[in-house]
Each structure stands twice: as structure tokens, then as C-alpha cells.
Image (cartoon, rainbow, N blue to C red):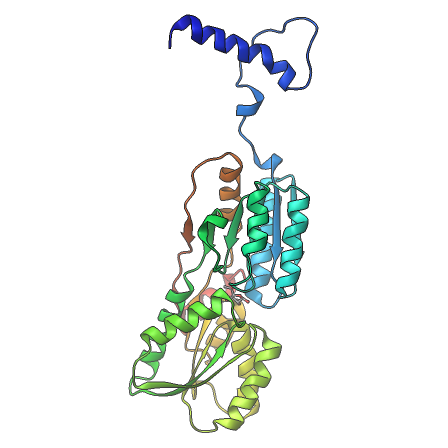
Length: 331
Ligand code: GYE
């Protein structure tokens, strides 16, 4: 570009600046030495983050909520708009809509189930508010959200199957206590588990305990009546349900280790049950997603590039690890 024309454009921009900033001074001001307001990078102090939490159904969820709240506090964001949908999708959708109304900077959504998000995600997109899907997945087209941060639930199911295969080398029959029906966590874990379970292990039955202790216990009681003496193992989709199931198993007079239990999460409760001999392997699912969520939210506010999918790095824990890690376990 010719220098004269370039200079003319620069001075035009500078002349417009005070007007754009909403304060036209009577006399010309000195030329700004810093970048004009529109180019100033947003900071955490500008961030209003909406976190419509799906519920408080498990220790995993409690730790996830704490991670979000603590990180918001540490980073000093302007406002965290937090709500608890009590495991009801309609409550979550209403909370997302309220956040759109409030023109929050970013919405980070941990969806209770996979389906049924198209309408509200489209509304957020049309309002120019980026959405990060956190923890569980959605079945919506990826163009409707910015990114997904969370665990690979299918891989968790595969890891659980590998443990059950080791625990029942001669094969056998097992039961499954599944998570919330239609949730990405339950769907993925069930799929991965079936993909890698040895052919000589049969899943006799699968029922949901909705990821809670209270709902898992009666399901286990019914299982124990119906399949008495017919199964050797149980795959449980989270530690809270495992703890509920163990109460029923104990009450039935069964000793630790008689039934092989593989669980998911790696919470303190799960570790304690491993230390006590009830759970033989616990597939980790990390709830401490706060730091990653806020870092990505800030990038989105500044129009910086982000990954479309960020997977959490996880492992499998055994009773020996539990004894060692219990004293320092955070959640
Ligand atoms: O495993 C369970 C919680 O979505 C990964 O939800 C999460 C699951 C977790 O209730 O404990």
C-alpha cells in the first residue's frame, strides 16, 4: 500500500477513536501509545462464565462443582453464574436461556443427557455466546458448540472391561449398574465395556441407578434376589452407585471379594471401598476440570484458536493405590 494512503487511513482511524469510545473531546488528544480499546485483550476480570451444573448426584459432581467455583475465585473472574439442575434437562435448558438473556461471556455446559440440545445451542450461537461442552457429551452437530472438554467415556468402559476380563479369567456371568439413562457417561461406558469384554463373560442384566447411592441400593437388592448365586461380578458406572450396591451386598451376608466389582471415578469413597476389599479396580474419571474450562473460555473471549476436543488424561486404580493415596485424596 502506498505510504500516503496508509497514513491517511491511520489518521482516519485515530480521528474516529474518541467518538468510538463515546467521549469526543473538544481539543485533539495526544496520539495513543497503547493499542486502541477494541484490540485490548480481555482478562479474567472481564469474564462472566455461566455454569449450569447438571446436579449434585455424586461425589464426582461435588468435586466438579468445587473445582469450577474455586478456579473462578482464584482467577478473580467478574462473575460465575452457577445453577444446579437437579438432574433435569429442562432445568438446565432454562438455566442456559437465562444466561443467554444475561449476555454472559461464555457458557460451559455439562449436559445431563446427550440428546435434545439443538434448539438452545442454536440460540446461544445466534446470540454470539460460545458454548464449551464440559464432562459428558452432546449428540448435536459440533458446529453448534465451540469445544468439548472431558473424559473419553468409551475408553473408560474399555478399561473397565479389561479389568473384568482379568478378574474373571475363566469367564462367568455379571451384572451392570448403569449411570443416568441417555447420558454420555452411561452410553459411552456401556459401549466401551461391551466392545472389550471377553466373549466368555455374559452380562445377565443391566439397570440404571442414576449415578446415585440411594437409587443403586434397591436395584442391587432386586438383582440379589433375582440372580442369587448366578453371577460373579458387577460393573458399576460410578463409585457412588458402587457404595449403594455394597450396602445391599453386605446386608445379604456376602463377604468382600466374593463378587468382583469394577467401578468408575476414583473418589475417596471408591478408594475406601477398595481398601476394604469390596472394589477390585476403579477406572479414573477426573472431575477437576475448572482450570481447563476457564483457560479455554478466556481464549474464546479473545477470539484465539482452541482445540475442538480436549480429553482428560486418566488411569486405573487398584486396592494398593487406594491405601497409599487415600490420606491425600482430594475428592
Ligand atoms: O462418573 C458420575 C457423575 O459425568 C463423568 O457423572 C460424569 C459422571 C461421573 O455423576 O459420578
